[in-house]
Length: 216
Image (tube, rainbow, N blue to C red; front, side, top):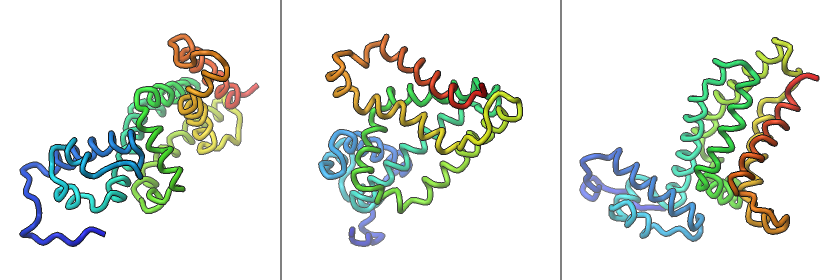
């Protein structure tokens, strides 16, 4: 555990928020490239352009910094999902948007998948300490539930769809494909990340999800 920092020893910075952001950005890159075990505080401090003392002052030891990185990663995807305005469009379009967004976000942010892989190797021991992550997800689940209920009332969606199960399925359809694309491309002798393959995958996932939620 890091030693308490006295007022005399506290690092001085003119812009604490910018310093925190620089540390988190550098740490995100470092953890994504090297995992928790392989990440080095020295490299993070160098990338951020600060000294290690300042890093410890803001985040404590490496595990505390890793949790902050995880919380930031979840916060960013939840913030972007809110921009989809799922409650303002008709239910089928909302589901299409969610599937497409999840797919495209994972492609644009491969570090998100890597960070989640790392945390799963540690059996979510860091996320279990975070009340912030749970708070972030509750409104999102409520949004998906509201879309499903509107679709049910309109006679478009079938009843009894669990919003959490549905989102896990949507995320899983993208997550498995992308996190295993090297092995899958090899064993099936097909470039699964070619532009054509990515378009086909999104169409396939959308059809699968809508085929489940839409009434016969």
